[in-house]
Length: 134
Image (cartoon, rainbow, N blue to C red; front, side, top):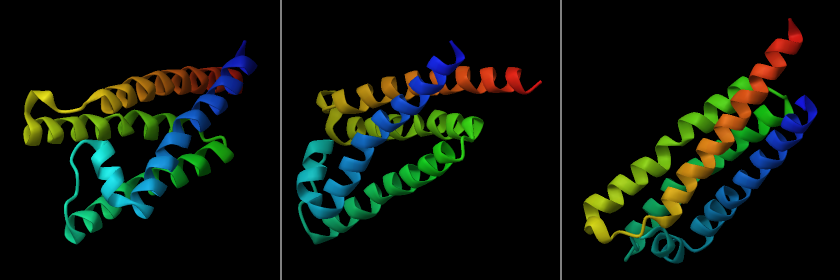
């Protein structure tokens, strides 16, 4: 069972990081389209620059998560993914403040749920690893 949790943890982490990677790449290459998909379209070069900077945070999260995954630092990875839940919450809050209650929040709510499920799985795996090491 513990091996299944480990395999699921690795697979789920990579599965969650894939759309983060796509979003970050898309944001750097086409910030206008990426910001429109996000729900708050950038309308000029300043807005496009902001989107590039804003989405670059995903690159940092991706790199750090991959380092933790490769080094099998499960508690660190679980902590990072748990804290990352705050990002789509913040994003949804900004969208709601700017656009009202009709803001497109589906992607953000889905991200919150996916990160919460991944975090739970990673914490279970972390507990298994700690039990094994005693």
